[in-house]
Length: 386
Image (cartoon, rainbow, N blue to C red; front, side, top):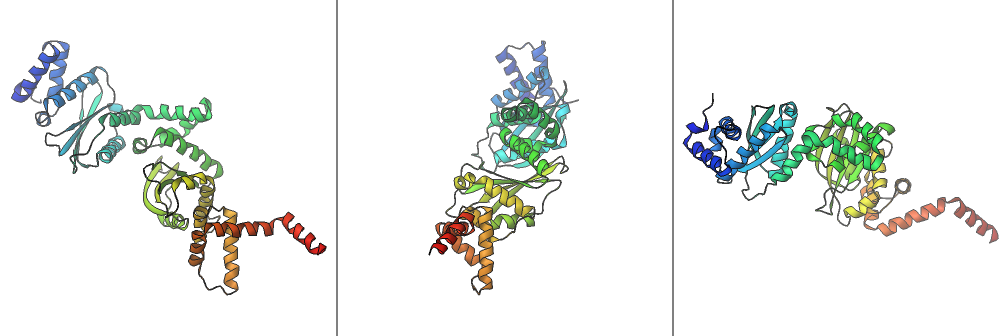
């Protein structure tokens, strides 16, 4: 049996101080609860904590004994190099996936490395997972309250919150049906990484994916701090798409792929979401691209489904503000010119068109006029009159 706090001089002093501070009777319920908590928690860690941190951990653990719920506390070591994170969960909520999702959330939030973790099953159906993180940057700020809110959302509040967001857009009945169909497929690491609004949008795209039986593409401007970057998601039924198929297509649209975060739903059996961070070319900003998001999403989906050509002409949709039909005309025009002896290659032509968007749109306006039946009839009538 673990030693009681009365057997550890430093803990005994701290416990007696807290008993006196809060007026707990050592023989009463609160006093016994405090003794139990200080017996169960790891003594090697407790003796290293500052008195106020020890007090926070002790009182939190005592409150959870009477009312089990998800709770997170983050405590720095006295020298600031390590971060000790206490996470209490109901035993039914503990799983390997949940533990790993919490670990990822902590390392991302603190820009830290995980040194180790341990789990203890306590009374009243509570489990304590204790993480130890190494902080290379001792000045980093950790928002404990935000992490605690994320934890609670991950464990018990995520599905109701997403349903409420969907109900706001679709109505209660459709929202409830979507949660029944898709909710359980979203793993804990996804719930920790994305907002409720983003989860609702992802579910709407899954509905579209199943309805159209093809790949769905969605641009999002979640990267607000940089107007030269955009987020883009590709939804595919079943497993992951080879990056060797997606990345060249994105590059042909004029994007540079910075990173990709894959998300598997229902272990890939329902869908796979590729979440890309894209860098825009000079002269293009995210607001201009988002204003024409529908055109770009449709064009990229056609390329990924094999219904449209995958070449550098596609970048004119972004750089020159064209649509898919305009790109088809320019592609056909280039091939015709090549047959007549044009010496310039595809990349040279596309680069010239991209750098002169006004001229490019003028060429398209000419094509449209030549192919407009009414305009053609007017030219014929003028010819007869002449």
